[in-house]
Length: 456
Image 1 (cartoon, rainbow, N blue to C red):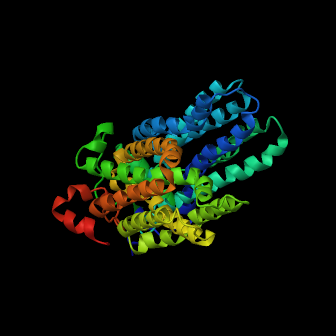
Image 2: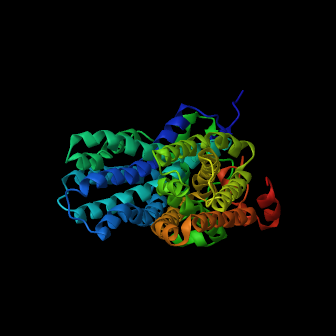
Image 3: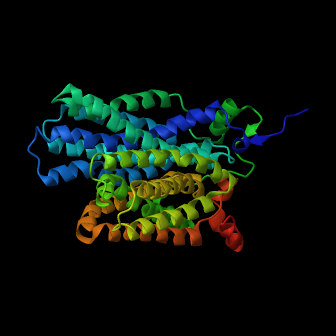
């Protein structure tokens, strides 16, 4: 009796899936670590170099600027030459540049290296997301993709912890801090040597025999990629704006940007914000910052379950709304003598629901686009969001200084509320869909009313 044929998306979670998660989540970890470590390194470096405010600003933003370029170029190349090949090239570039940071002679050299490093980090986003999506079981895809987001916070927190302990090295500690990213990069590079290429990408390039061989080696001989026919497709950057994909490119880029602008601004200046509430005496502003960031990570856990139980749509829409209301309330009470616990609880509520939004930055872009442009679309959205976050973070202290805390929080709350409205109108439901079904929603105009409004 022949065994029933199953698709790779119907296979249960296994050790292989967790291994692919580790490969992919490493990208988010490195992003958080590389962005975080420069802050600690600069505190030592600025005592040894005569740096203007412009140079300091360029050092802080060079990585984000590089990510803008890396997202666009890296995403396109990921679809053009393959997931695994780009993963390895990207890691090699990151390794070399991380080490070179140790030997810089002046800040300008470091700006150039940080920009190149940003390109590599930005390129890693579309590779990681596409690879994870294309191997995930459809019943667990949302949780696996959303879980990648949590590693950003782990990487960011780790950078400050490691930087703190490296301060004891002395005057050269900043060199060791910057070069320390080479350690996780080398680990990931060696681990990724053994990873397979995405069968979906291979099939989209007409290499079905090679794709099926990988699937059967991993899952068994009675497993196929899909019950639907695979169409060979040529990768074109402009396809993310054509054939119904433009709507999703707009949706993903806009909701992602609206989420990260307040998040990066508030996250960067949270000690100053708590001080504005009157908690500048002692260490309350730093204690509060630490507690809030812990909840950023812990708050994601229940939503990794709910994104599969309730669906993508409600776990994006309502977190936008709750985060918005939390900031409006904080703005309204910013001039009052409020208890520390009251303010902290509101920021924790904001942080938990805000992180629930953040996981969709990995889910929606990787589900809504077909394989031949998946990396390109994710890369483009990454670039747009990083540009938006850098502009928002740059303007945040000026708005806070010139217009006060209440207006600043109202603006952040308004951005989240706009995200709520856009998500309410546009967010589709892709829970339990195959990647073929999810990426075909934009072609099912006759059923669109049903598809996008279920799960409110």
